[in-house]
Image (cartoon, rainbow, N blue to C red; front, side, top):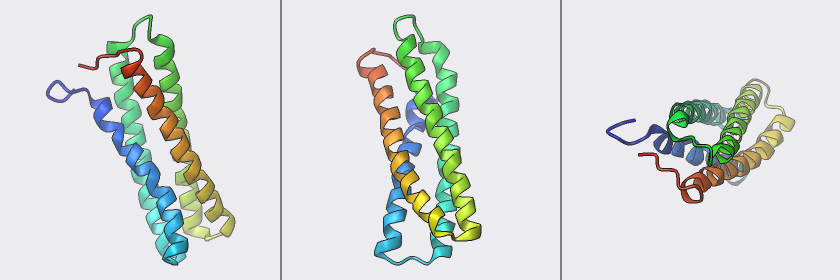
Length: 143
């Protein structure tokens, strides 16, 4: 907590914003004809930021879990936790793709990057939705 504010609701917005950067970067490669080296440099930077912010959000959620978990919201909390783990796994996969692309520039890695960027947006949205259900449907109070 920072001045009475729980960390998780603050930290989880970084991966949400960063999740869209991959798809935007993928589209910009076509629209602006970005050079492969420049594309993979940016992909690597965003991947590193994404995995760090995802891990920070997961860590903060684990720290808050014991405070807010009840018998009534246990299942919904576990559901949200599992979605958060999926975000962490796909962020690690995107980092691996970015490292591979940085060193190889293979077209298959580039198109895998594009497909993964769409998957990241979907998984992050579903994770956010399950978190919103905790707050609005199960009325979890983080304060």
